[in-house]
Every structure is written in C-alpha cells, then in structure tokens.
Image (cartoon, rainbow, N blue to C red; front, side, top):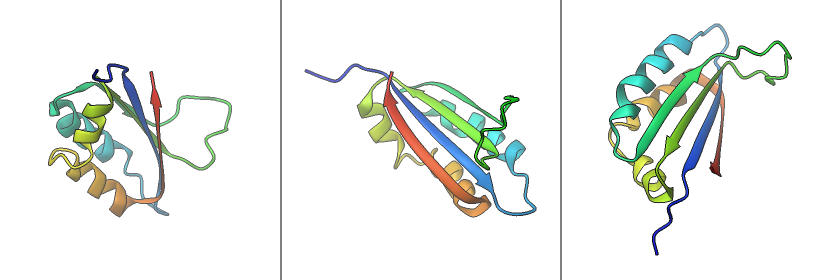
Length: 101
C-alpha cells in the first residue's frame, strides 16, 4: 500500500554576513518549486514574529508534498537544484526538517 500522508519540508537559512538573499530565495522558490509534481504548496519569507526566537535564521521555506514519494522525487529534481544551489552559495547555515502532516 502506498504512503498517502502529506509531508512538510521546512528549510531555515541564515544568510552569509552582509547578504540579504531573502527576495531572491523567495523568487527562486516560487518560480521553480511550484512546478514540481507532488508539490501542493510553497510558502517562504522572513519572520514576522515579535518573539525574537529565530536563532539567527533569516528566511524560512515550507514545501507541502502530497506524500513521501513526492518528497523523495523532489530532492534530485532539476527544478529543485537552482534553489538548493542558491541556498548553498548564499547561506552560512541551513537547517532542514521534514514532518508527516
């Protein structure tokens, strides 16, 4: 039986010193990730919290997938690579956390 539980893929990025890559990261995510089969939604941006508990992170991406198989297909997908490459080049620190939704 195929897994049908949705998956949330959460990415937190802390930009390199002196860099604010928020607008470009959001633009790339909206342009590329929304075209991938199995992606149900893409949300990203800087915090709007007043708590100050971001731990140094500047930007967050949340991708909602149809199921685990869609997440597995997304990771090597050619439309994911521009976003992953941009984060690799622009971020001092990245955290990824996936949960069943």
